[in-house]
Each structure stands twice: as C-alpha cells, then as structure tokens.
Image: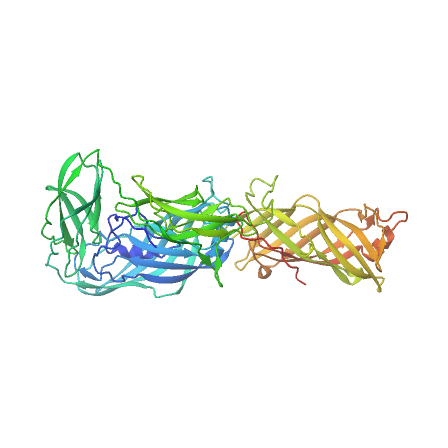
Length: 630
C-alpha cells in the first residue's frame, strides 16, 4: 500500500524525464501522508495504472541481479497544444529490490540507501522527437535485515511543449544508478560514493505512456463543491471539497482566503492544508483549473474558525492485516534469528498518520515513518524464541489508534554465537561476518582423503573481515575460532584400517584476495596451520600417539579459484591447491612413532579442495555448515 501526500508542484512534459527517473534503481516520490489525496480525480492519465518493467542490474560484489520497477507517470491522456509542461515534472516509481541484493547491501554493512539515478528517454511528439535525460534523488531508505524491499525517489525533468496536434508517446531508453550506501554511523561503506550500476531492461514495454495533443480547450471546469474543514488547529486548516469535472481534465485547484490566494494543488488533488493562519474566522473558496489554465467559477464559501484553543482530537484508524511477509520461491517467512519483518495495511486519519509504533507485548520495540510503505522490522530478538507483536498508529496531535491484530512470531536459529566478532582485524577491512569452509585433503601415500571441517562432526566457523572495491577486487582476512577437527579412516600399509582425529590449528590470520574479471573473481587464499593427530586406532586397537603428535613445522596452504568457480565472496566458491604435509614430531608414548607417520603421511603434492560457504552476518536467518565437494 502506498501512503501519499498533498503533492508538490509537477510538470507535464518533464514527466518524461520523470518517467525515466522513475525507472531508476529504487524510487517512488515520497511525501507526508494525506487521507484523501489518493482518491481525488485529476486529469485522465495516459497510463493510469503505470507500467512494470524488469531490469538486470550489474552490482558490485554480487554481480547481475533482477530489479522490478513500477512506473506511474502523471502524463495526461490529452494535452493541449502550446501548453508548457512545467507543471508535470514529478513522477511516481516503486522499485522492488531482490533479497539477494539486500544480502549484498547488508554484507557491506549498509544501513541506508540513497543517491541518484540517470534515466534517458525519447518523447515522440506529432512533429518532432525530444531526447530527455534527467537525474533523480533517491529517498533515503533503510535497508532491512533480510528479504526484498522497495525504495523511493523523486526528481524533476526538463520541460517541453508541442504546438501541433496528434499522437505522442514516451519511451525509456536507458537507466543508470548511482547509489550512496551509508553505515549506521553515517559513514560510507567500502564501495565509497563513486560507483555506478548499469541496468538493462529485460521485460515490459519501454513505452511508458501514450497521449494525444489537441489543438485547443476553451471549456472551463465545473464549479467545485464548497470546501469543508477536515481539521483545524492554532495556525492551520485542512480543507477538502467535491472535485470539479472537465472535458479534458482538471489540472488542480486554487484556494482563496477571502480574495487572497493561499494555496494551489496539482494533479487534480482536492485536499490541502493551509498554513500560517491567524486566529479568528477565515472565509475559504476554491477554483478549479484545467490543462489549458481555464478557471472554473468559485465554489460556495466556507467560514473556518482558527484559534489556539482548537485541537485536533480524531485518532487514526487501527492498522489491519498485520502479518509477516514472505519472499523467495517457495515463499519463506522473513524471520531471522534476531529479527522479524512485519507488514500491515495502513491506517487513515483526518489529517495524516505521522508514525507507527510496533509493540512486543506492552513495550515499543520499533517506530516506523509512514512516509515509507507500511512495513518495518524488529531487531535485537533472541534466537529460537517466541514474540507477540501489534502495531498502533499516531497522528501529529498525539492521537493514538487502537492496536492492530496480534501475531505470534518464532525466531530462527540465526548465525553461530560470536559470528563477526573479529578482534584485531585490519582497520580498512571494516565489513565483518563469519563463514564455514569444508573440503577434502588428499593423502597421496595412503591413496585416500581426510575430511576437513566435517559438517557432521562439530564444524568450526571462521570470522571474516573484508572489503570490496567496485568491480575491481576483494580483500579479506579470516580466522577460525578454534582448531578444525575431523575423524578419518585410512588403510595404512594398504590393508590395516586406521582411524585418527586430524586437527588443523590455524596460526595467525588467513588472507584472501580476488580480482574481478567481469564474470566472477580470480581468488588466492593463504593460511598456515599446524597439523596434529590424536585418538588413533589401528584395526580397532588404541594407538597411543601421545598429546603432542604434530607436524614439526607449520603447513603452508595456498588455494586458488577461477572466476567460473567463485562468483563473489558473499556466496563463496571452490578453492583448490596442493600442500606439502610436513614431517611429524612428538608422536608416540614409550616409542618413537614419528618415522611411522612420516612414512605413511608426510610428503608433497597432496590435493586440497575447499569450499567456502556464504558469508553470514548477525542478521542472517541461519548459517548452516557447508558440505565438502569431491
């Protein structure tokens, strides 16, 4: 649902640019909520329901992602020749950002998205074509913890006019985004402020609106109804009236206090708030104007009393339909271990809703600005817990609605405890999270492979600190929170089943660097580990290897991945390399087993294949260990 407001001045032809703009990344013109403006008729629009377009946008870090954009222009269906389009420069656009894009934004620690977008279009007029480009400002929007979301934007476009009657249309030709991502403290993410996202249209017609230019219009609108005071306060009054009709379309209304014009509305809106009024009686009338600026007769007058003792006392209606939204295929509730997304049908108010409060029991846990879509989320929840939520609406006078319906939410498992707690990471690697790695380490001499970080045997996660430079490279450090242990069975000497626990104890931090190729990243990852062996059994009988059976020196690990196997660090990929297993020392109690292990295990050229799993954040819905790939 959309919350609308008494709109600002718009422009007709600029609509086109608006159209373009509308197509940008995520946009929709925003404003204060207004109860009646969405229902008042204006000019008949060329595309009253708007158009929905699909785009493929090439983002940093996460690559090409789908974007759905709904564009609604206020281009009239009929335009009078010679009329300047300066009153129709605003456009409305709703873009739906995919859940994968949300994950990418959150991985960069983006708390809000804003910025600009450049849209280009062609206005085809009866006797000429006009090429337009326009930039729009994206309305600053909070990035949710998970799932897709919608963003808003507004802007103006250049004006033009047509002197010749005939048919016309507006065609979108290109869309480029320049998002600005900010962290919760207001600082820039690693992507900085100088990156762009090119979008290619993949579905929908690029004809955003078709209209007709007529030679003239000399018929004025009909007389509007007398204005009615919807609400009034110490220095303002909100007025509404029965709309006029017109043979082409009502452009807007002029509002008079006595003989002084005090306000205008546009796009046919028949509700307005008049500000800065003095105490005492005021006599209001209204005149309608059409697209050719013909004025209607004045409405009958209405006297409204203004004074300091007048307070608006009507509460908003209760929000309805409170629910947890779903996303994905098949649909999945948008609930994580520490958060939950909520949606509801907006309240109405005689003046306007100013806020929604989300309650958990009797406690306010979040407040939502109604200039956004009526949705929000609650964070800081406890994993594997149950909560009951309701929502109430407030208006500017402090009136509070009745609560919405109550819903019960069960939080998920969430990421492992300590995910992202990377102390001592380089300062320039400011994005933190955690991930699992798992794989197989071949042991050539035994003609077998040991599982590394077996997901079925208490797997260990690594905290990771990283940064991404737009479409250039990624840098990361990773640190496992404890040694990796896995129990593996080999046939030693070709016939004796031997089982042992292999432990890889990381020394220092691991590194990862990837260069972007256009299709993914060429990655090199390095780390150093100490190899330990414990709990050994041969033919079922215990082998006392002692508590200090380990490689005499660290084992150096260098793994690489080509772009085909590593699309981005968020999803991870397959890394491979060969390692030299060092000689062992300290093995055996009462007898020296070093030579035994050196003969059976140590040596060069052992293939190591590791799969890096997705990066998890504190807000991740879950963070399951990854399965090794052979």
